[in-house]
Amino acid sequence: TGSGRHCVKYLFQMVFKAICSGGHPVVIIAEDLQWSDAFTIEILSDLIETGRSSSELCSDGQAPQGGLLLVGSFRDNEVDADGFLMNQIKCIEQSNVNVNILHVGELTEHGINKMIAYK
Image (cartoon, rainbow, N blue to C red; front, side, top):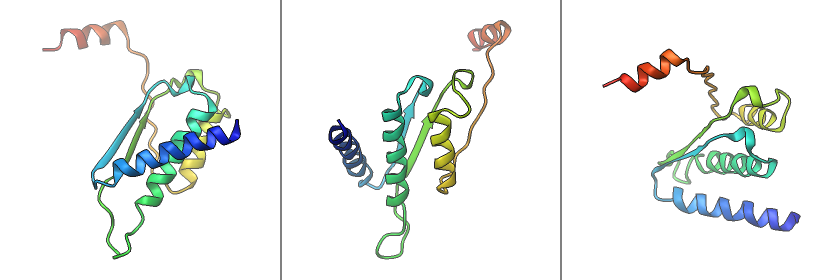
């Protein structure tokens, strides 16, 4: 239900704020986002917004310590350019959050053998 979703989002925000209150940076790694449902993507977007708003200047005018680094991975060949995930990424970019997208190609057999043989 809608209220249940709201409670889950609120819970994630409160846990996130509690973790960040120690003044240390937080790293969240979310893999295979191409398989995520819309609600999961909304939660991650909300965490980004919470991290952005909590990184604004403190009451004493000083920048707070800590911050959020969200590393998300997805297979771009399994995501529609106009799908929910890509639209959320565009919205995040438009809200003055630094977004970097790195395109990583498929590994070749030679590349895999080179990694395995590396000492």
